[in-house]
Image (tube, rainbow, N blue to C red):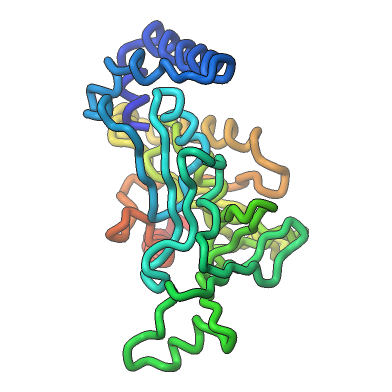
Length: 293
């Protein structure tokens, strides 16, 4: 998002030209099978020292497809992996030569992976077994039994599905799941990914909230960027209205049961983990104490 913000800051003419050329070179790559965009966009990627980078490696969380597409159109490719400390270190890999957009990769040799309690869309709890799985938590048998079953499968806490080629697609964390009034499962991370390239959103957290009929609705808690906060320092209503336009735009891309029905704007930074993920329970507690939710 920061890279594209820099392009937009040059004005509508420059932004429009770059966007057009990104689409043009993507089309030429599909036709000719050769990528000219890396050389062409060197004047942009060089500004952030990416012009000589051959491949980008991503981990720590699923990479939003919209971000991958953006970098691909600038001539850069990704390798993505999935794992956790307890599975030392990865159990899937999405390689450049067989990259699947939206997936965290194909299950590696010697590793068993199963989807437990899958729903109608095939999404369920991701469980892993193999020599990569830890023996257990040090001097904590109870915690070990909670995460590793009798068959040796480790409960990752992630929800996802496997395709016919054994590629894993993650949809969210089990503990963050929102269940709507119609019984539909909504994964906050899926909706949050839709905001990746919007300049009016610095951070966003999707969460459930209790509606008057007792069902659970979808709420977006947005932290605006500093530039927007300064722009509307004396007019917070206009700031909220500006962000609501972004919410409306994202809602047009979402299924009916995933649409955001409540917006909360916070002008304070979210509490973040060392891996730059929002600490959801801490953030929700903070927002409740401030009377925002």
